[in-house]
View (cartoon, rainbow, N blue to C red):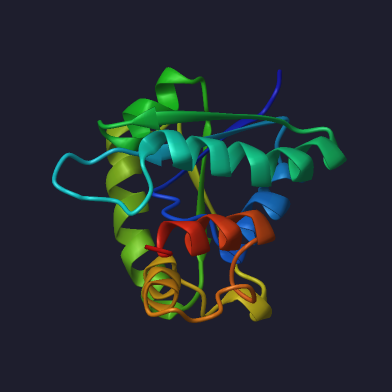
Length: 165
């Protein structure tokens, strides 16, 4: 039986922190489903299509390197419901610090109550990527700053294009 994991997020944009989590997750599972959450009340910087493209462009080589199958989906319902839909038994969550842990523990507890078959696995961020958030990356890029230390090269290019007008 193959182990399938579900890694949800907005990925707006993909950061080096996301890359770090994917690199670690791919070493744990046979198939990783990266899931882009779509929320009608939020206005993302990148369209759903752009985020799908970024995710596959950046994560696919990492997965291929270790022989992990990767796919990308979107979802607008409960994370655990979407995880079940793709056959995942593992829910991947990245942690940067204690604040993340407190918040994620609450969510993991609620998810476990709703769907006990899906186990949350926390992946601690490597020291070099702990301070990176997509929100800060968007702010820096929007003000003309250099985001290359925080995002993959392809994403930095997309951000530059997005704000060049």
